[in-house]
Amino acid sequence: MHRVTRSGGAAIEGAVVYDVRMEAETGAAAEAGAAAEAVAGAAASDEAVQRDVVLADGRALRVYETDAGDGSRRFRLTVLWQHGSPQTGALLEPLVAAAALRGIRLVSYGRPSYGGSTPNPGRTVFSAAADVEQLADALALERFAVMGASGGGPHALACAAGMPERIVGVATLAGIAPSDAGGLDFFEGMADSSGLRAAQRGRDARQQYELTAEFDPSSFVDRDYAALNGSWASLGADVGRATADGPAGLGGLVDDDVAFAHAWGFDLSQVIAPVLLVQGGLDRVVPPTHAEWMLAHLPHAELWLRPLDGHISVLEACPVVMDWLLALGG
Image (tube, rainbow, N blue to C red; front, side):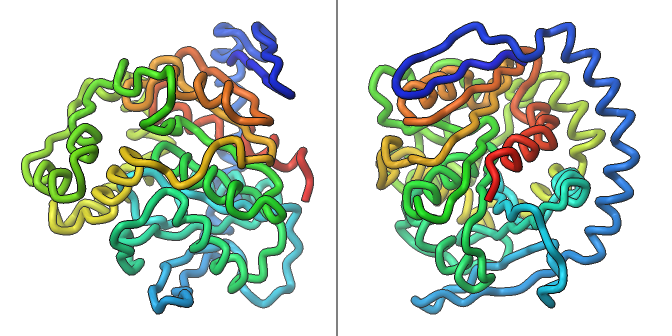
């Protein structure tokens, strides 16, 4: 894993944290700790709770958290997870395990039209900030961190832009950049950009595209498929639940893509919290150029590049990403 940091407008390139050989070596150490995390995760899963939070406009968000809710537990940090597209928002086993081992309170929710959350027609990426602010009020979260993967990345950044006084830090993994990013060839390097191209033409066009959409297997590399068959099997299962109703049940994915393909509703310069961008060098869903562009446009950002990872396998970095967030404090 290579790190490129940017602070105060000056780029520092070539700062190596782990090279490719060390990735293989640390992989063995990660496997050695997997059993301990699995035990911790199993215990935390028993304590996970689900609730609906009703917003001021009457919509409901389906919320999940690892706190028993009686206020007796003490956590080092609360992390709000922004799920990928499409998922239900339910807590995933590797995240629960890593959070439990680190004393982190983990909160997640289904964005509008996902997993029992009420639709919010016409939502933008920035709409997530207002939803999460009300969610945080309902859960009595004063200051917290935000993590997001893939389609959850932009929504995590939106939270930081909309609630600068409450967000300790942000981490995105394989997060997509704004479609109107100046100087970025937005579609270059994507195995299949047809869904986002349809979304540029509007919601009706994106909904129509979904009727015949098929997943392109070349979007994932071997490491991605290994992750989905191994430690991240719960992600694949959750995607299955999110897509079980076919095109008619994919309103959340359609609305996400339309939001990504149009103005986000905020500028990256508004994100004043520290941001960690984690990117797989072999990602064919969200190419590395997206992370590189955001690194250059976020005020306080750091990029961890994992050269051998794709879109899913990059999630193996989640435990050390949580360590990074913990180091920021609350």
